[in-house]
Amino acid sequence: MLSGMAAGAGLVMIGQSRAASAAQTGTGRAWWKEAVIYEIYPRSFKDSNGDGIGDLPGILEKLPYIRDLGVDTIWLAPIFQSPNRDNGYDISDYRAIMPEFGTMDDFERLMAKASSLGIRIIMDLVVNHTSDQHPWFQKSRASKDSPYRDYYIWRDSAQGHPPNNWPSVWGGSAWAFEPETASSYLHLFSPQQPDLNWDNPAVREEVFSIMKFWLDKGVSGFRMDVITMISKMPSFRDMTPEELKAPEYVYAAGPHLHTYLREMNDRVLSHYDVMTVGEAYGMHAQDIPLFTDSARRELDMVFAFDIVHVDRQGWRKVAWPLSKLKEIYAAAGRPRSPDSWNTVFLDNHDQPRAVSRFGNDSAPFREVSAKAIGTMLLTQCGTPFIYQGEELGMTNLPFDGLDDFEDVQVPLQWDTRVKRQGVDPDAFLESLKGLGRDNARSPMQWDASRHAGFTTAEKPWYRVNPNYTEINAQDCVSNAGSVYHYFRDLIALRRKYPALIYGTYQDQDPDHSAVFFYSRQLESSKILILINMSDRGFTYDTPLLARASLLLSNMRHRGVTQDVTWLAPWEARVYRA
Ligand code: GLC
Ligand code: CA
Image (tube, rainbow, N blue to C red):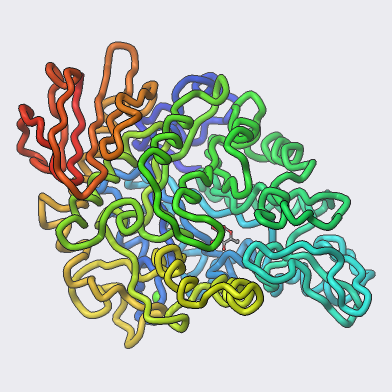
């Protein structure tokens, strides 16, 4: 257990049991509600030993940078042993550190240093599936009589025919045929990621024991990878044509999901003061309280996917109107249940870069729009998650063609969409450029030196965005008007005004097509947030601002005036009413 933490206003001391802090959750306060969380994708964060791959000592070296931003909690994307078909989301040993990232000693040093800086660490729990290289699966596939056979989901497959029509969420059949035992195993993701059989109590025991292993090392919780998919439909019937359009909703509708999460909570989570955030892939917004209502004792928060879908139709990237974003935040701002809590995120390792997607990454607007959407991220209802580089306004990566993508999902989707369904290759590639996960996975841009200061190797594991000479941390940190410093000020503001954390939400102008104007209110403390979400400037006058005082603005960042009724492109202001 860590001790003596200063983070999160210290409302709930680490080490205290969940039971003792329960009174502070409810509709009350909790450290994870007040946290600002920073996601690290270790492979691309900082390479310390010149092999071109980010690693744990690299993260340790950069902890002061993260702390200076004002962040108090880090989510580490998977750091466990893995053959890296899906960059660590295919785990072959849950209790070992990926050798490329370092050793268990490195991890313990990282934890100790983080703790001394008041930073908590949460880990990625990837237990819907393992790697096909995991010893459980090796034994499971070897023989029908192995005690591990039932750790995974096998069905007899006559002549290699898949047992049903279920697709992998990335394309192709969700079944892989193994001629040795004339049967197929289920993989909702790539064939190298076989799904675990959660209906087997031994599997659940294994998972709980893995969780305890890391919690006992002092980690402060878990982000749970595709946790919605752990319970499978018992009949394994074919999906209907309608269901096949969005199979993730079928995969997330397993009958025992909530039972298993409750069991996990009772057996493990309730014994520690930790936070959990589940990836709610395939979950309808109205079902989210089933996870997050604290009375149900399942998870603390989830990542809802409405924001992810806002500019997608199937594989296609589409325009998103501001009205859609407003609806999403308005719904999130209406308490969905007596006590449930949200997350707010625009970016992560599976998404394109926020500024390229929700702002405008062209030269005149990049910085100002990165600050504008950052204002939204840090003032909406819920615990905010920042993805590495978002605080610099890092942008999408240029792609010339299919070969520039590294993501395991790309060839699988290409096969399905272009080769089998006949989607126009150019149109598909265009969408992929805008939506592809590789956009977020290029190395962190630390400075203007070769490879952005990410590595001293000849070649980093993946391409550095060529714009690193203009967009990098060193430059941002030394420039008081940068995106980094604006994020820093926003985080400080959030800590200063509890209304920004616990306040109610009200959209003040739901019908405006370019202005996002909303309030957060806690008792008599009221904060107004005004953002021009467009490339044009215009006059915007509202009596609500007459007696309000400006706390922060991305135009006159640090120099404060307020008489203006002119809203410049992507101007954002935060007022105290
Ligand atoms: C989640 C992860 C993603 C991974 C997938 C399969 O969506 O965020 O990166 O590929 O699960 O584990
Ligand atoms: Ca390295």
